[in-house]
Image (cartoon, rainbow, N blue to C red; front, side, top):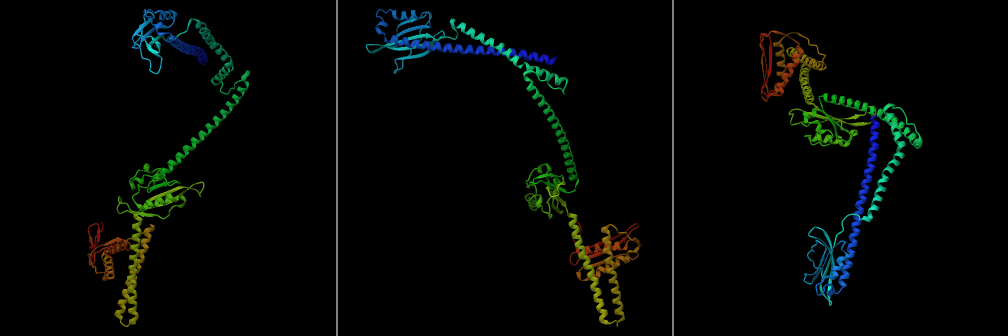
Length: 543
């Protein structure tokens, strides 16, 4: 019902629009016709005024200005134009003074104006005191070949309007135009009637039966058939687009989920990470970058600028990665230090990111910044330990070799010397065995498979034996050794081997980091519930 009301309103609006358009056309034609009539009458009036001015200029001056002061000729001119647009006729002498003047009732002739020197006839537009427009034509008058004055003829400017004889023509024209509006309207309605019927069927189809088709009939049967086919194809296309949209939306959500999951994994790693795309620009940076370099990850994403990096070697490393691309990454790590983290050592490495479906295709480069301070210290400690072990092994081996030569040289004749050499060799063999046990214990500690062997041990004997071992092996070092261990110390349940390893490390550090000529002190003190063992030296100490 509402649709039919809308249709009726559209029909009425179309009829009103056509009537309004017809009226507008009639008004436009009237305006154009008025303007045309005005222009024609103005041009005709100018031609008439110029012709009269030329004729009057040919009349002898004495006839125009009779000596008796009569106005016979000008009066005749006025009478000839009494019912026309005549306003005034004036004859002035060479000084501009009015000699003869004839005017229409109520008209006061305007002031004279000079004719240009190079002309004998002129035309101007002026106004009367009442505001009426005047077309004035002036011509020179001559007497005996000399200028005697001028004649001025004034006519009212024609107004806008139609003359009585033109009214039938204009009325007929307006009637024809106005009559064309309903004729065109009904003709148009007749032509679009099939389309309107099709529109009604389409509205009913859309409102009540979405799967229905328009039944073609009449002149529009071919059009309706093609239109039905077009609608079917559009339905199929819309269904395909909806399916594609659903697929794309699902894929987008899946990609977003995978991206978020990968970024979450990268954020949870303890290392600072950068991901460079194929062009070398930063596509991802985790939050560890901010704590390491003081720059927010959002500022780095999508940028290839390396001004945020304070270390020149790291900048050069990243530049090579960006310049060479994922296929030419630099595998060797670059170590660097930062002023904001004193005492720490960092390393940066680059690794290619391969596509899961195609192992030969690289998607970018993963740049990893790691804190390798512990590893560096561990390598340094391992090197120091190896050097210490080599030194500890070298000393007893030298002693074994020396006393073996003494035994060989003496041939065992001196029993006292032989016993002393054997005792020294036995002590050094035990010392070597202890070093080997220490190495095995350290290996087991690193592997996590060490099982402590707890047993009661006399601390005095253990500390005294260890002290004498270091004192004998470092006699030529220039250091002083001092032992302060009570003899009556109680036995303690410990792993004797592990305790010896710990004390050996302490004594080694005290000797290594002592000052020249300094003193190494090994002391022990017993309380009610503990035994305290101390190793001190005169060096710089431990921060």
